[in-house]
Length: 461
Image 1: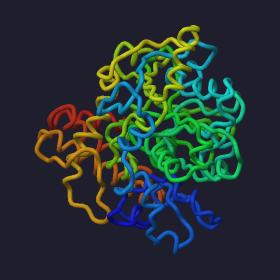
Image 2: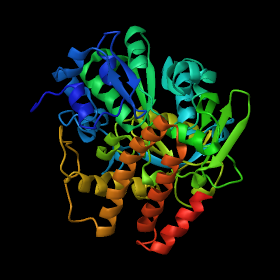
Image 3: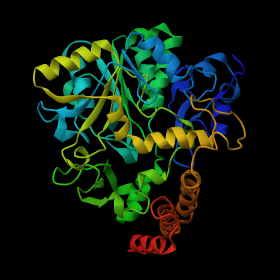
């Protein structure tokens, strides 16, 4: 142990993802997770706890440079895994396909595999509950559109289907797992699963009660302001929104044609394709949490099984949705293999190169881009990652793209905050259109001014 850290150290350094693991361990009711001015979840409460460096926090924060990394955790979790890849981690088998049973595929954003595995674990009597993200019943009263919940029936688990690009945190369900004996599965993005595994390595109670972890491939975490931007661009008051659907599924359209749909309190539905949103290009990084710039795990390498979208043809054009699946735990591998034999899962074995291809853009950002960002001057805690700092290998254009993406992420939060305060949506939307036009000009058109102007004009309409 080189240096003890506090929550304040991580937050101040822009490395807090808002997972809530630290708050779950306090046992202090005054300490909780709450939204900050940028729409991100951060720990709040007891000032002494917040500023006090401790070994416990240093060992369990997923972005602490002193905590075990994904390779070290996986070596202990999956010691007999027959395969290892720098991008996938240690694994048993990889698949591409979908759930053939019932309506799982139709109800999910992709191939339905996440909900199916969680449900199957419950059906087999291997768990008593699943910690996963669901929509809140009354978001205007609750103060957020989504939160973690422990579900104990198949019907409840299915309510968590579909992707949620919204800040959520684990503190409430981790406290419940501590208080209520049982066997649980936890579904989460890579850094959240890492936080769970770090807790399990430190405390036997979590090790005994959290039996399975289901990981989601991840591009980055969004601020809550992303939903508000949807509302501005669909011209509805955010206070009227009852439900948010980030990826409305239409089997007649390609899976990668994202469509955002808002349901209002009066039952009215409004929607818009992401491509027609000023901030709808995922790769540009609008509203991205700053900690995501310093993550090197795309595929939830510490989870028993992880899931992503098969973003290669012919799968990306199939509007019904297709999963790519990486299985690490022998017990889960057997469960999946049995269901394939029974015809309940339509999965084909693929190699690591195929899986990497489906996530190529995310891996460039988290490996080559991360290596470049690690060479930049930073104040506060310096991340320690599995990639070495490198400002030589990336081409000049790639460096420029990484720079623009970084500043779009940061400035989108602050410009939106100002526009929100002034009640002037066009201030943010005008900036976003200009920013994405310049970004696309360099990312796709190698800096051609005419293409940037055309893109900007198209977004103004």
